[in-house]
Image (spheres, helix red, strand yellow):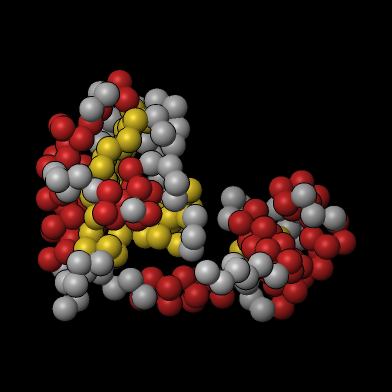
Length: 219
């Protein structure tokens, strides 16, 4: 196996800046606090990103995400043309189970990203923001994406308090025509409501949602 290529330091630091600004505009001092970068480094990177439109300066001088990211985001979304088409399946899954539903895709060696999310109507619910990055090694969706062959006979995987205390989840693979796993669809919610064996209760509904999403995949 070839050794994994190490990330370029300046790219890593630039991503730190962008992710810090995803929480809202920040003054330079706030950017330094959020990233842990030295003040001159944070200022240099934010200014360089502003030159490319990825960062902008607000009227009060703070740094904020730039309009160029909107363009890039739309281009990225176009790469998943079936992602938005999966929305009705997630909405139906929320209605069928009463729990929040998410669609994840694998990103790199150890990360999954939430491509689409629909929230439960319960006051106590799991919320995963669209675009959120979660570890691949934790949670039922991570297991589906990491080890598709480990999916049980029912077509679903369940986890209880694996990624976060008090949270359970059930996920199923979304497969392409050739059987490859494109994504994982699932529900998540409090253990007190889902119980210690959430798959037995909600597995069929999650598998049905996966099938519904597969039906809208481009041929």
